[in-house]
Length: 253
Image 1 (cartoon, rainbow, N blue to C red):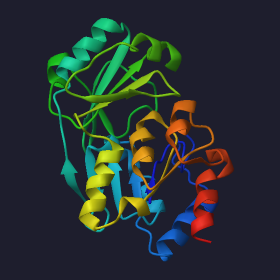
Image 2: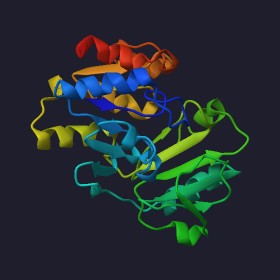
Image 3: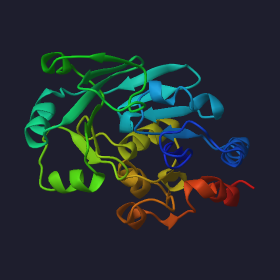
């Protein structure tokens, strides 16, 4: 059972999970389900959410960082060089700020993000200092809308990475090549001897598309944009309506 966090288990940017969602996930584990949190958040970013749930694993940073709850440690971390991507985006989009993830610690930041944007400790850095191996690069285009960012990068090519634009903020996330929530889940399920046909995935964002397409049953949240709903097998009520709980209640009453 693969569950996105922001927009699926919580309102975007919140760490609060409703009692109905918590109860539904707990019932699922009592029926033998393996719960995997699948998020664009960093490892630090799940620290306030994971303890609320009986999750066995967390796939963070859109698939680049794996965490095992039983071991309480990172079991996989894939990295890339963010330097070329930062330079390309800086030239195309004046007024952008960047952060490279320092797994389990926080971020190096080139420019000032908005309050609450980043998890963990934030250290200001130069462009040269930012060019270190990282599992996740994020960019915010200050004073612009998500639609403006999506239009500006519509024909952009960024070789050597996987990337997507958020649908709620002027925000771009980049991770290593061939890394996604879907590819990470496929590897994890193979290790756990779980059939893909038995996998349920619930999400709401562009970074959930591969996961929803991969799962035996992919469910998009009711507030998800049209292109996300289009790849899902079904659409749940919105996060404000405890949509994830209402899906799980069908399978784990």
